Image 1 (cartoon, rainbow, N blue to C red):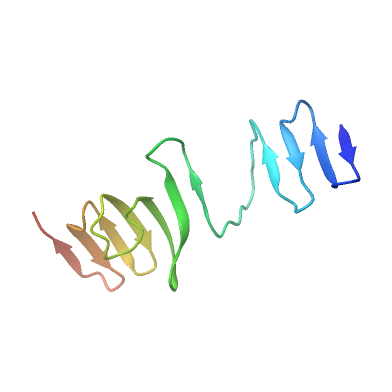
Image 2: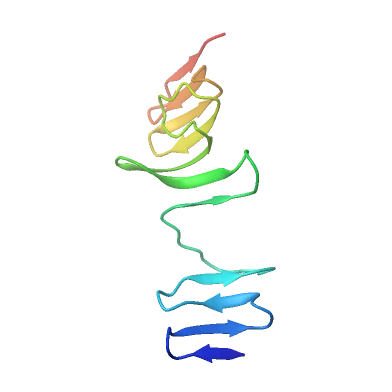
Amino acid sequence: MQINLSKPAIVFGNGTFKVNENGRLEATGASISGSVKAESGSFGTGRQKIYIGTNGEYSSIYGQDHNSFNSTSKGFYLGADGLSLGNGTFKVNENGRLEATG
């Protein structure tokens, strides 16, 4: 374990677990259980990441650039205002109204 009081920072192992002076945690090979709170971020690698975030007043989970209910970009969106898939061709709003084209 290395504790650097000049930054400050904590490093365990060969840098596989780090906490910097701003509280940023980096852990390689981590297994996390329990509740996780995140206001934004992504899962996965490459071009097909899944994002969590907010678009105005709604928290959401979305894929690719499909980051809002009314998006016409390829991907998916799931938020409190509804679900939409594809290029905006399939949508179900928060009231259960279904729209499907194609």
